[in-house]
Each structure stands twice: as C-alpha cells, then as structure tokens.
Length: 248
Image 1: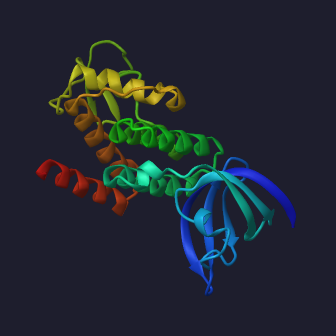
Image 2 (image 1 turned 30 degrees about the vertical axis):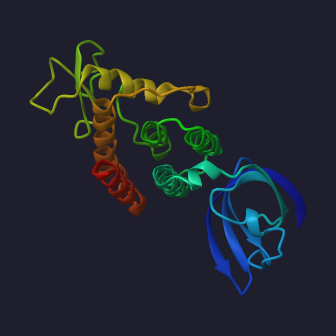
C-alpha cells in the first residue's frame, strides 16, 4: 500500500472491532472510499476527534485501491462546529450527506465532492439551509440523469410565456400548453433556474421568500419521488424540525 493524501468529507462512520471505526469518505481524488481508523475509539487516540461524520480535511492514508485504506492522520480543514450545534442546520446537513451518498452509488463523478463541500461550507457560514439544500438537490439531478426542463416548456419547447412549474410534466409549462396544472409564482419560475445555474461557492447571501422556498421545495420533493425513487428518512426529520420551529 502506498501513502496517499487527498481532501475528503466523512459521510458515515461504523464501529469496527472493539476500538476502531470504518469511515465512508467522499474524496476529491478517488470518489467514495472506505477507510479504517484503527484504535480511534480509545480515549487517547489521536484519531478520535477526526473519525466522525462531517469532518472535512486532508486525509493521509495507506491507500488500498480495492479494499479498505488505513487512516494515518487528518489535517482538519473544517469541522463544521456551527452546524453541529444547531438542530436545523444539522438536519439539513444530514439530509444532503445521505442524498449525496445515494447519488454517488449511481454516479461517482468527482464533481459531486465540490458540490457537497461548498454546500456544507455555506450552511456553516449561516446562509439559508433550505435554499442551499434545494440548490444541491437540483444540481444532483444531473448526475441521476433526470434533470428537469427549466429552460423551456416541457411540451412545446418554447421559452416564451412560461407560467408554471410542474413535477408531473417535468419542468416548465408555457401559457399555450397549460392544462390546469397548479400555478407557482413568477419569482419561483425565475429562482429555480437561478438555483440550477448558480456556482454554490460564489454565493454570498440568499434572500428567498418563504413562498418561493415552499414552492421550489414542494416541486423538488415531488420530482424526486416521481423520477429518482429515493426515500430518505433524514428528509422526514427536516420536516419534523420545521414543524417544531413553527410551533415555537
């Protein structure tokens, strides 16, 4: 085994033997790999604090191409401490990590690493977690091969007089093709296209109205249900947290 270094984000951790863990790590170099962190559950282990979900850092490992690599050390770039201290933020972070893991099972493009990394950084920085989650959800549809049509009407291909957004149709619907589908606001029609094309790393603020956020989120939830076939318990948890926030 050779010593390799690469950036990575821990997607999950599983206890192994009496004192170790197996880390599922998304990397910028090899995609998703398994890494064993030997002895990390011992109180005095130097690997204890870095062998957990949501650690983002430079991983130094004994790399094994077709098997478990072995962790040597991690130079932490971001521990996402603010996310971990906030129930709302951690619920969104957990969901996007779970979603990313499901997507890379079907498409292990290295581009997905940067999408996840940049989304988590922006959530850590305090930007709107729902909007960021929706942006990532929309972009990940590309890697599942089921991108909605948000450039022109799903039926006729026209980019004129777009009046609504339909998960059933698969995207935009123009005035001429409209057939009593639920209407969304004009801002939602414009905003979802911005979501798709924006560079997440360049976002400095996200001021999105509750109405627009709700309409985009409903569209994406329905779209994933119809075309992706992914059901994640962590999305249900987000909805429960939102209900608690409203009640308080």
